[in-house]
Length: 104
Length: 177
Image: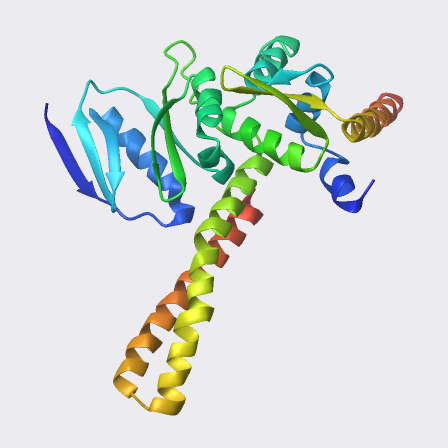
């Protein structure tokens, strides 16, 4: 994994985390917004400026890839590289959680 | 229909000020119609709390259909593009009164500013180094045309002030967040 990817995605923003998590199956930006709202009981509402910017940036970084366009909505899916960074991030969060539990 | 025109000047980093201005106007019963050459056009409307948001995204302008679709899906009305910026608005929900924004994390907001800086400042820098600076030096050192030299010199200073201001503002913004 190159330095740029490491720097941007380890750790990653909550937005990037949810995008990767949701894109284990192909989906479009608005689909992700809806999924995340449901998953978090409305606590996290992703917004279009952030979503559009993040999706195009993540596509350029090759952690997600374009799948198809339907009704003006572009669908993406996670790549192997994306899965790899998601796993690293999960481990990192797990470790943080474990430490916090032991300490508190 | 009653309309109103106002001249306003906002630099690229004053988009928050611009957003607030449009929101205040709508609250006062003036709905934003368009902006052209720094002139803001409004139309009389029922006063309402409507949030205005600006985005700067070249990809969005290039793939406009899907870009606008995303905003439309999320309930944002698109108004127009103006020197790289796209204008959107959304009424503040009557239920919870929360003013939504189009960015939900600081990183993407900062990336938007970086895109604006690159898109708007880079062409100016090119003009600066490819045209103004050589022209200045030629007039000063070889043709000795001091009238033109001082005119171009003035423009150069003005440019440098703009660059410096942008740099300072960008850093302020970066550190603030």
